[in-house]
Amino acid sequence: MQDNGNDRTEPQVLSEPVPPYPKQRQQPPGNEQDVELKPRYQAERYRAADKLHGKVALITGGDSGIGRAVAVLYAREGADVAIVYLPEEQPDAEETRRAVEAEGRKCLLLPGDLAEASFCHDAVERTVRELGDLNILVQNSAHLNSQLDLSQLSYEDWDRSFKVNVYSYFHLVQAARPHLKAGDSIIATASEEALKGSDTMIDYAASKAALVNFTKSIAFHLAKDGVRANVVAPGPTWTVLNIADPNMPEEGLANLGSEGPMGRVAQPEEMAPAYVYLASDADSSYTVGEILAVTGGLTTTR
Image 1 (cartoon, rainbow, N blue to C red):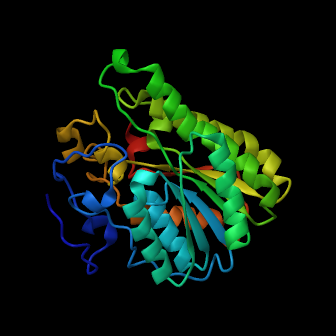
Image 2: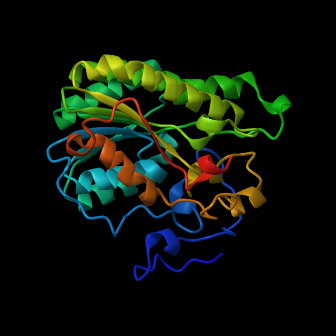
């Protein structure tokens, strides 16, 4: 594995770690604090411009990975942040809170299971009650359990994937909508797999595709009130979600992203600016119902 320490003397496109990555395994849901080769989320090159001053964001899966990186950049842009995560992910959530507070903003921790409709509604209401508003909803949490063969796909995994990845999004949108105003936004995290399918992440890809279509379907209705709904579709990213995937072959993890034009995975901090763009009314006021694919070129090659 080549890791030049995010050398800021050369462009970031060339300065991130490349395969092979450390072979490792965690039990789901995993903890980022135990990952060998820590995911980069601090975005030291990023320069804020007060784009989200006075806003409040609710980010599911905000304890680690892309969600943590988004929370940090939102805080740097002036927003207070609430993050949703599973109780087992408390150590990672505490680290995210420290990072957000280091940017001078508040961070509300909301542990719970998004597969439960009541918790989705409670998360929205607590955010509004304790942080005073809700302007940005980011659905970023996900359930992932790859299958090496179709025969391994169980109803239990299918059901869990759709409850966490799709049903929770429905409940969160419905709970958030009464609080959202003109200039506010909803952002869903899909995946490159949602755009092309996957022979190993079958239920995950299907659920993410449903999330894309739901976002496009509600965007028209929300836009009438000046609320924009959009999607970010990340490519392979160095997060604990992949490391805690029970059926991800260690060799596949070690070479994650190597099949794309960039020849490597993305770091979470490379994804986060897309979420700033879609949350900022000044930047994306005419962007509605779109998919912002940040895949390292994978969707151009197959």
